[in-house]
Image 1 (spheres, helix red, strand yellow):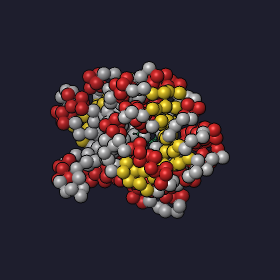
Image 2 (cartoon, helix red, strand yellow):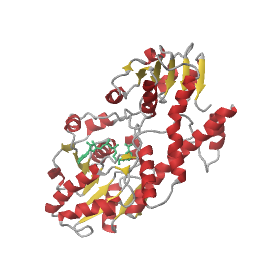
Image 3 (cartoon, protein in one colour):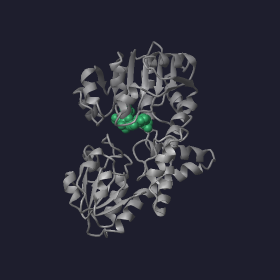
Image 4 (cartoon, helix red, strand yellow):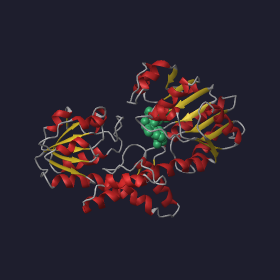
Length: 414
Ligand SMILES: NC(=O)c1ccc[n+]([C@@H]2O[C@H](COP(=O)([O-])OP(=O)(O)OC[C@H]3O[C@@H](n4cnc5c(N)ncnc54)[C@H](O)[C@@H]3O)[C@@H](O)[C@H]2O)c1
């Protein structure tokens, strides 16, 4: 099939490279010339395991010119949908939809516009379709629309994309869904076809559930810490029950990243807009917001911050990525700087991105981080388990076994 992908971020570029690998003709569009330049040189602009190799194997048409999407059978919208306290920011989606509408004006043959971005329930029907129809073309007759959320996880995005647990196709009508089903027939996963709104909600509800599971075990962890119980023993015991499962039960300093926090904020904002008070979801966010501060409070029990040198191990929101969006390291760095500490930091991948936010801190090797008044373990990179913590003060947010050898060791929930 002829596929166009709008937005060459984590989702768009991985989707483009994988769909090309599966034998489709793929065009990728972005407005960021620097990104496009890197992709033309077959280098991924962000770190994703295996993506450079894959870009070396496939052919992608790379452009900032929307005219290039004219021959497409399917146009995927993979724009960022960040959110703030007031809800989702849809400016990128709107801009791209206008550009696609411009192309639809002159497009003779049928195509499907498929939204892959995470959006609030109703956005495809109430916002995107009306913009596409400013082309003078009619959805259902001249073009189709689907909402097919993406569930890949950064750090293992290619594996996730190629081996999805399920494929959700929200369809405007069955002709739209049939087209996308044809494309997805290459995958072994179960395909569920549903309404546009249900597909949008499946994505948000899935992420909200995962976030809830994390905040739940962190709450249990806070209680265990006060009772002198090891939360990880508790989680292990709980995990044998297959109704609970043992994944997403690693207590620590909570979730970050470009998806869970913003998807939750998006759902909370939507619920409030329709006069529903989403108490569970708000509690999940609230608890998550306190964890970084709790870690700093534990640190303060051992080292006064003013004038101290504090070392951070890990800046990315999780291991395997260079993404620092909504990383817990940001909240921790904010407090440390505000309280007069000097911050030294190490991360194997995320220094360049973190440096854009905090050029004033020192970026050093992991061994140099150890040479601080106290060390905070913020991201669970495997390599942190090979360091020599003897004689150090360590506050561990991610349960690194070796760190227990420190002179003073505190786990955040154990
Ligand atoms: N990152 C993830 O792990 C993940 C997983 C599942 C779903 N999602 C969802 O997928 C969507 C994309 O996420 P992402 O992390 O890939 O975003 P991203 O911010 O990494 O990438 C978005 C890209 O869109 C480009 N862009 C902006 N305006 C444009 C325009 N008018 N025309 C063309 N390109 C434009 C940007 O330059 C950028 O390269 C979001 O809704 C996100 O919630 C993300």
